[in-house]
Image (cartoon, rainbow, N blue to C red; front, side, top):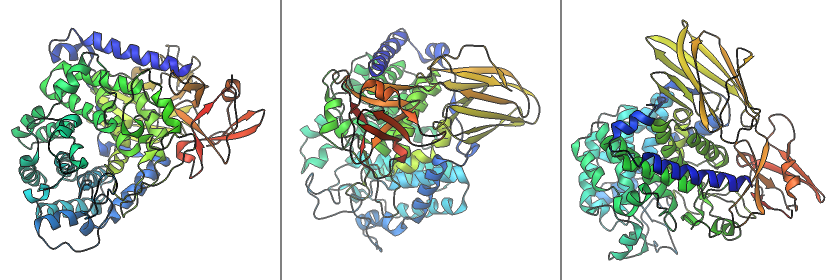
Length: 610
């Protein structure tokens, strides 16, 4: 019943968003009504402390540093007629005579993820200040600059897709790694790509209606271009980037109906259309049209209303029709349940935009689910491009690497891991909003005075979050803590050991404004009692066990039958343990969070008899 309740609340939330913003006529009025002017913390302002997120970021950073630069540049050098030494990365990354979609996907999109690798390295430099990382960014940008030619896109199936990634890589190199040549190189890269881009954003049906030599030419994603084009304009690339961004907004087919409350997601490619919601947010922020904010809010509401208990969505890379039962049916029909790195990256982005504009903590709830139940459990990428792609929620699931190297958007894992810190904290003139409870420290300056906030916790393996303030002199500001929508009535907050009496409202940021002294402490204890979530309304007896933000996977050689009462009696084996157990009349079953299932066979949704 929790799944039904959650789905109903999400539907109501989407309706409320649509009606609340229907009266908006200009951004200033709307922003004055709802905008808290929050912005994510800067990359260098957050330090992750020991824990799984830091370990995952460090491993990915090491992988990016180890990737062969000649191999990364080879597709571009070959297209420009330059010497191209070294081995191929292979998989989807290098041209292949055997490419025959969908039977043989070798050579699908040569060089497609290069920009994402550059972006990941630039963000990692902003996080770490590591000189070797910055030097690698500069070498890759300079190496790419020598190869820029329109010939690269001749006979190329996805020009918009790959240029979009080059765009973010180059503007991130400029913004975060101070690469002087990046914007000039971007101008030349845009000139090379423009003749091969459509006159306006095209959906996939429109792409399929055009003449094409093979199926791959119908998969380009011009409708995702605006976000990074707007960002290029905002970072100083020039006025034409803003004009191009507006040109590629998918209004009539996507944003207009979403803004009006129409769910047009069913049947669409999942990742790219969630990614496109960030283009709507950039359009709202730049152009000031509240239609795009309505489209983004309603769009992510429709996505979350058909998400798995993990926060993942889009089995077989498609959104399903509401009320069809297709989400539950997918559990026995596919192992491609959620495109994990790229889907998580898209979800994090749109959630950050919406938190910044609305201050609504429920977007942080969705981000948290995706964090702990999907991307944190991704198998580590290897320097040769071997990557984890799909989370598997099948009745007999497992984690495994994708069959081809460098699959679609394989560079997004480096981007999202570098974003862990900036996703954890938001700041404004009034203070700090704590969104993700990861062991970390945020540093900032207020009125030329240094301050910091440290988060110490084993959450979500334990419900207690400890926070400590450091400030050179007493200072008055706000610390706002996200109270998850699932938090039950016994959630408590204490300041310097004294329990507060102000109600903690689930689904909101709880703001504490006071004069803070050096060494002041907050302790938040979340009531994270177990609950059950059905996969969809048509399969009410297929239930996931959820505790706090964690969806728990049954692991083992066999899976036991359960009653609802068995599952609700799930217990963690010890404090901070990654193992839970459920006892039934047939024995005891082990359950683990996705980031600790290893290579075991798993089952997310348990069929219940009563």
